[in-house]
Length: 104
Image 1: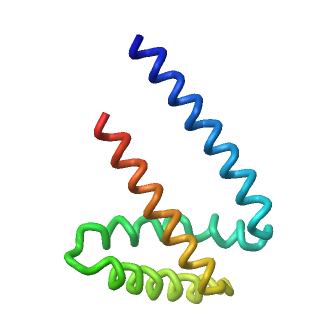
Image 2 (image 1 turned 180 degrees about the vertical axis):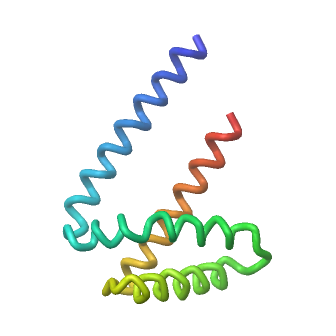
């Protein structure tokens, strides 16, 4: 019984991921998707690192923004601030989902 429930939720999660990818492809231009692809691993590492620091969420967000922006400049990428904030939020949500998965 548990296995059937688990398979149901895995299937549901996979459908949600596909829908989210379709949503992203409609919302973000190809260039934005490339930038997200270029910076996502870096952003995820920054967010993971800041997650354990004793800072307010706003301070964490600001530090993540500054570090990701600096990395984008270093890589020669022109990135709008709103895209960096979106990237931070995506990284935070990914980490939340990852930690919830570990609790099973």
